[in-house]
Amino acid sequence: VRPDINPGMNGLLRESPQPGAGQLFSVFGLPRVRIETPKSPEGRTEYAVELEGVDIYNPVDNSITSSGASKVAAWFLDGDYDGRTFCITQAFFPDRSAWDKLARALNGKDGPIDADRFEAFSGTTSLPFPAGKHRCVAVKVIDPRGNEVMSVQRLGH
Image 1 (cartoon, one colour):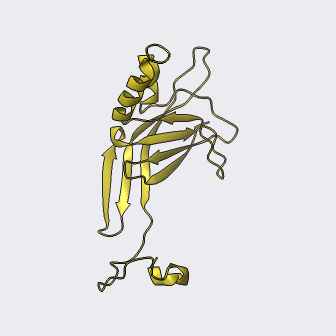
Image 2 (image 1 turned 45 degrees about the vertical axis):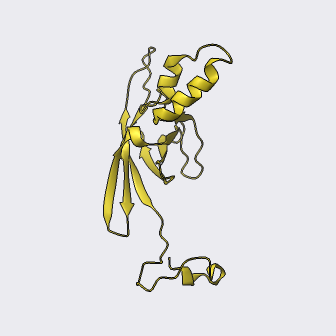
């Protein structure tokens, strides 16, 4: 979208003498995910999502930047995505530097932090979950620059 497309943006964006240099664009990306199907102790089929990373398309130079899951600031799972509304059922924060600060801050208040819980919330594999009514899962990823991208996957039958 060019800034002159919307008259309400007049003067808000810097004009550039180079064609295309002052254009706005949306970031396009896609989380790389893998769906696993572990069995519950009762023998029911459950699913788990593994976040492998995220690919971000840069329209300025027509390139794709890939990053591993450990570079993701946060990722969220909707275990029964209806195709319209994303409802977070699980949340993870793989950037461990933020967790270290939080753990230090909380350690003195209510006793030591459960290291296993921090490990689970900083992981790249979701907790197991059963297929929901819509048999669809959505993964929303926030990268370190604040870009938000989403992937939707159908669950097997």
